[in-house]
Each structure stands twice: as C-alpha cells, then as structure tokens.
Length: 257
Length: 262
Image (tube, rainbow over all chains, first blue to last red; front, top):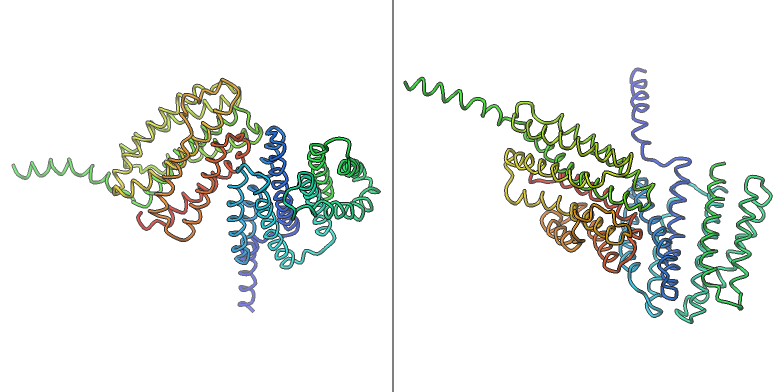
C-alpha cells in the first residue's frame, strides 16, 4: 500500500516534467497554422520573384518579399522550439537546408529561363511542409472540423498566389509547365470559396462583414483575370494580397471564438 | 638574520598566494559572461541604429528594450560573481560597471527622448576599453594558451563584425543624415566575418551539432552579404538578422559547454 502511494506521488511529481514540451489544445492549432502559413509563404515568394522579372518595382515587391521571408524565419524557429520529438528532427533539418538553399536564390536576379527552377524549389518546400503536417496530423489525431477549416482557408490563399503565377507565365509565354496553374487554381479557389466561405461564414453575424469584404475582393480578382481592356497584373498582385489579408483576419476571428 | 629574511619573504608571498587561489570553473564562467557582455553591447548599438533609422520601429524598439534588460541583468550577475579575494579584478570590474551604468543611462535617455545617439557612440568606447583591460587580466589568471585565446577572440569577432556590417548596411541605405553611428561604423565587412567563421569551423566545428549550427550562421552571413551587394533594402533581411542573434547565442553556449579545451 505504502509503495503504491509513493509510486503515485512520484508519478504526479514527474508529470509536469514529461508534459512540459508537448503541444496541447490551442498549441496544436498554432503549430498546425504555422506550417500552413509557411506553405502559403513559399508560393508567395515564388509569385514575388516572378513579378520581379516583369515589374522590377522595388517599392512594390521588396516589402512583400520581406514579409514572406519574415514568415519563414519566424515559423522555422517556432517549429524547432515546439517540435522536440525526435521523429521530426530529420524533416526539420531538411526543411532548414532547403530554406537556406532557397534563400540564396531569393536574392538572385531571375529571368524567364531560370524562373521555373526557383518555382520548383518553392514546391519542394511546400511538399516537405506537407509531409511534416501529415505526420503531425496523424500523431495528434487532428482531423476535426476546426483543423480542416483552417487548412481549407490556407489552401484557398495558396490557390490565389498560384493563380497569380499561372496568369503571369501564360501572359509572357514562359515556363510552359506552369501554365496550367492558372485554371486549376482559379477553379480550386472558387470551389473552396463556395463550399466554405459563402455557405458557412456569410450568414454568421460575427463573420459576415469580413466575408463580404473577401467576396468583394474575390469578385474583383476574378473579373481582372479575364480583363482584356488593360493590363491587370498589378491589380492581381494587390488583390491577391488583399485576399490574403482578409482571409487572415477571418481566420483570427474564428480561432478567437 | 636568515629567519628574519624568511619571515619578510612569507609576508610578501602570502597575500599573492591567497589571491591566486580561485575556483577555475567559476572564473571560466565569469570569463564567459564577460565575453557575452561584449556581444550584448555590440547588439545594443545595432539596436540603437535600427531604432534611430525607424526600421520596423515597433519591433526594433521592443528589441532594444529587451536587450537592454538582458544586458543590465548580465552586468549585475557578473559583478556578483567576481571573487571577493581578487583585489585587482574587483577594481577592474568596478571601474567597468561604473562606465557601463553611465552608458546604459544614456541608452535609457535615448529610449525616452530619442536624442542621445551621439553620446551612446562616444561612451561605448570607454566601456570597451575598460572591458579589454579586465578581459586581459582574466585571461592571464586563467592561463589560456595562444590557441585557446585565438578561438575565443574569433568567436567574439564574428559577432562584432556581423553587427557592425549590418549597421553600416542600414546606414548606407538610410535617407536621413542624422546617423551618428556613421562615424563609428566604417563599411560592411561580410567577407571578414565569413572567413573568421570558416576558420573557427575548422578549429572546433569538425562534426556534430556545433558544425550544423556554424553552417546555419554561415548561410545567414552569405545571405546578408548577397543582400548588401545587390543593394536590396535592409528590410529584406531584417527578420533573418534578428533571428541571427539567437542562432549565435546558441553557438556560443554550445562552444563553452562542449569544449574539451577549457
């Protein structure tokens, strides 16, 4: 009996030590979100580098690129702090290596011939993050509607940036393998918008205003993808950022609830 | 006669002998903290430049405040750890602390009114001179070999050059002409920092985590150098530069923890 009491007491004392670095509840959501954010940022960087070729407007592109780089740097550090489990170590090391390699090309002056290689680096990053994300989902059983909704929102934003890339590559007839990105992602974004945002959030009092702004952005974006009267590239760039911003606000509001 | 001579000789030797008996581990720890204080003082200067130039003003101001608190904590810890029986060390550290306090109050003034930059860059020279003399005395007491001293000075040098290079890069891009640091910082010397890191990697980073950490820093330095050479806005590397501090601190800890040569 005495032994059992001592054992229970020891276990109770050790419990905080064991559970110290284990992500739980909201922390799971934060870790999950930081991976999704990085996935979006990887294509945002690819989009910015493409615009840099045809619109070398530093005042427009550099702050955006700096923000995307900041998202990566902050979240890589965060993931390393939170994911202590050895099973993530190999992937995290690889993620750091790929990011360091990608960083060197971020400052390269690209042209229409070597852009595709940079794009595929971004895709590698996205895939690698996808592997870690799936592992994290499986390990922690994150398949509830909250996590799925969050994933949908970030997939939507990712599609918007990919639409930007597809639009530009088609317009300037470069990197043929990327032309299909335009239609694929425009369709995907519309599907996600209808299935998720329009149905769920437009009728919710808390989110209706933000959803209206988002839909407004989307309509403007959609219209300009087929605008033949004047060059819509800069409009698409700015509207993509606005969509990203409003989706972020919506996400924050829903997570705070 | 001989007994008298022996007695006087003993009087001379005893105090010196007593002062030489320090705990080597504690003294090494004191040395480590002293080097860290030098690193933090350089970090604070770069923070002042970032704040003064208004680069992400909220973030850089917050960083300056945090680093200042860290610096103050560290200086207090250092003073508490100076062996009581070491008269010369006590004297040197007290002189250093007086200059440091004065310098810190100037930075506080900058935080409150934003107008003491010139004094900050003037007073830091006195702090650094004081640091150099106490560091030299500590090294003498610890009896490091030439090779060991070379490694330590290289470790600190990497950080100092990086901070100064970044500050020079920021000031070069600055549109304001009030950057008092312009006289303090010459020009960016990324290559010197990279070469110093490569040499240190050859000496202590043959394998394992230390090598990996050094490679991370190396990749950062090359990235900064590229951004500077290609005339990108310093804003582009602001976050990686902020993150560089934590990476460097980790390397610093790793080297002191795992060094078989201490």
